[in-house]
Structure formats: C-alpha cells, structure tokens
Length: 466
Ligand code: SAH
Ligand code: SF4
Ligand code: F3S
Image 1 (tube, helix red, strand yellow):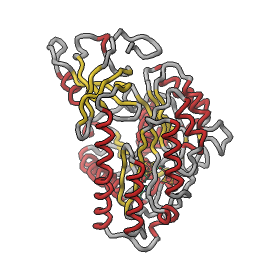
Image 2 (cartoon, protein in one colour):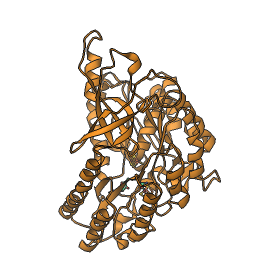
Image 3 (tube, rainbow, N blue to C red):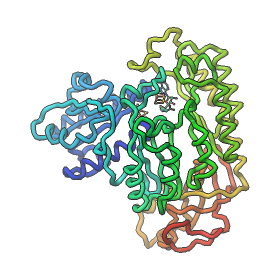
Image 4 (cartoon, protein in one colour):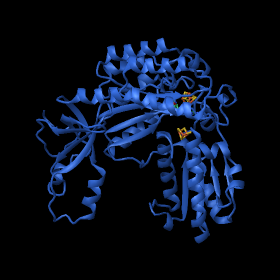
C-alpha cells in the first residue's frame, strides 16, 4: 500500500514464500494467507491499512485456517498493539523482519499461535535481499540500494519505521541488476530515501560511481533513481546527468516548502535559494531535464506569507510534476508536538491553490512536446486493451492496438500500432521507439511511431533505425 520501497518489499516477500509452497493469487476468497504490506506516511494511509485489515475479519470467520499477516511501516510502528486491536490478525512483522518471514509463518501455521516481530537491525546484511523475480512489469524494475533514513525531517515517520540508513554493497546491487537485465528488464529505478548519502557510512563507492558501474550493464537501457535530498545533491551527481548515457533526464527533488522558516522547522537544512541554485545547475548540465517535487502544505506554524513563498517557488521553478500533500500529524514524528497547527479547511484550501498553480505548468510542459520526437520505452499494451486480447481467441482480427510507454523525462505516451496477435516478432514491449508527439490531452500524450522501420528482436541495442 505504500511507496516504491514497499512495492519492492512485496516482491521480496513473494520471492521468499515460493520455497515454502505459497504462490500468488488475486482472489482473496481462495487465499490461505493474506499479507497486507502497509504505509504509515500520512494518517490516511494508516487508516486505509486498518480498514482493509478490518474487512478481512469476515473471511477469517468463513475460513478459520486463513492466516492474516500485516507487514510494512504500520506494522513496525504499531507492533503488539495490532494484535489487541484486531483479533483476526495472526502475524505482525516489521520492515526488518522480511527475511525471517518464512520461519514466522511456519510457526504460526504449525502452532496456531499469534506472533509479533518488529526487531530492527543497525545495518543491512546480504540476507536482507534475495535476487529473484520482482513484482513489476518485465520492462522496468525497482532495486533497493539503501534502507532507512538518518535525516529526521520533523514531519516524517520514515526514520522510525525503517530504521537507520544503511547501504547495500555495489557488488550485490550490480549482481541483482545484471540478473534483471538478463531476464529482459530494460530499466531500473534505484531506491533510497536519500541516494546522495549512498555508501558513505560503509565506505562503498559514491552514488555517482555506482551509476557509472550500472551504466555498463549489458542489455540495460535506462537508469532512474529516487529520492535525492536537496541538501546533499552533490555537483558530482548533477554532472552525471551530462555524462552517464543511460541515466534518464528526470530528477525527483522534493522541496517541501518555499519558506525558509518552515524549511528550518522541518529540519531540511537548506533554504529556497539553495534549492533554486541546484535547479539552475541541473538545467545547465541537462537542459531537457524534467524536475518533479513534493510539497507539504499546512505544516504547523505555516503563515500566509510562508504559503505565498511556496507558490512563488513553484512559479519560479516551473516543475514538470508535483505531488502535494496536506500536513498530517504522525505519532512518532517531532512535529506532532509543534503548536500553531493549521486548520483542516485552510490546509485543504492551500492544497487546492498549489495544485491550481501547478496545473499551468503541467499543460505547458505537455504542449511543448507536441511536434517533437522522443525516445519512448514501451511498457506494453494499454491496460484495458491487454485484457480484451487475453479474453478473446487469437483467430479474431483486431483493429490497431493501443500501446503505452515512457519518455526519458517520465511522461506517459500512448500510440497506436497493429495488434500483436498477428505478428509475434513485432511485439514492441521493452523496445525503445522514436515517437512523434501529435496531441497533448489534459492527462495523456498521444503520438505515432516516427520513421522507425521495425525489425525482429535482437540482442543488445535498441532495434530501430531512425
Ligand atoms: N525520502 C523522501 C520522501 C519520502 S516520503 C524525501 O526526503 O524526499 C514522501 C513524501 O511524503 C515526502 O516528500 C513528503 O512530501 C510527504 N510526507 C512525509 N511525511 C508527511 C506528513 N507527515 N504529512 C504530509 N506529507 C508527508
Ligand atoms: Fe523522511 Fe526526510 Fe528521510 Fe525523506 S529525508 S524519508 S522526508 S526523514
Ligand atoms: Fe514508504 Fe510509506 Fe513506509 S512511504 S517507507 S511505505 S511509511
């Protein structure tokens, strides 16, 4: 239910359960085991987890053998309390307990006991990760390179639910990525709460050096990463956007606020001028780079002037995309004790104004793309269409199919091409095509394959000649 790390962890969970006989199903009513992998970042996310868990009580009544387990950040945060609150939950396992999950489940199943494991380790061990099939499309995969966070932004629960920052070794990361590339994955997204401090504690290489090593992996076409903290975004990393060929021209650089006094109380260690300087440097190195960000409105003590400063910063930067959130009190985070809380209706009003202010840039960025050609990594058939194709016999003929993919700047592009049932060697999934953007709709871009003779799939480089 959470961020990309949570999705990656779900893949790890699946991979660990296969050897003890479990396989995935999407039908809750036939499941022997239901695992809810939760997020605690805002109170809404936590409520969503509990309301889903609550609904599982009825299933447990019908099938007393069913095991209900809760993992992830809410499990880590609430621990034992969940067992008292929810009598139908059998197992609570925290963010560091994934590698012990098979043993925990076997104990629960054999003894019909209820267990809690929320123990946290100081550093990562190679056992924390298995390299195996990921939950993701075949084209793109997440790879966790670090765990935890040491930044203690005052609104944030992550340091408490994910523990101290700790990095995996470059060898382990490379071996996982090589394996993924060999399975046909074309794009990896490297995950860490603050990738800029990758390896510093452990004395591994720098993050920029890690990118250079990953760039050499055969078969891989694209590298992305998230997230970078503005206080630590080094010149070395900015320069990577100019010299690491497979690194996509997109950076997610959460700013949170445009007001220096709010940033200070958030414990972010930078001011708005520092942020704007980083943006200028990024655009100087890579003029086509897409910059996206996160904003929190209604942080305790945020005045109208503070809020206006945030709107000003959004105007000054002209982001390619923005995730905006209403501040949410978290029980473990220090800001819960800050006074001058902003009222719910004012927070909502500020959220509306941020989104409205950003909308002009969303439209502008998309319109600017019309008439230009972009390299698009094809994810596959657009969802509803792949369902139709699965449901119908292959002898029927179809009109052109609707495909979708992403530009390096992470914009989703749709285009039409003949249906794949007829010409197997023209399957486009995983290929990089040159697409001319023809139309920008409010929430999508449409284009056509541009001057790209399609040839049968080979190894290595992209199969087109533009
Ligand atoms: N490590 C990343 C962020 C992870 S959390 C970083 O530092 O950028 C993702 C986003 O959730 C944050 O960037 C922030 O905008 C938002 N967020 C975190 N805690 C929040 C809270 N208590 N209330 C509202 N939004 C929050
Ligand atoms: Fe949370 Fe700040 Fe760490 Fe990001 S850097 S995970 S916002 S504490
Ligand atoms: Fe991710 Fe949510 Fe945990 S954002 S780190 S799953 S609190």
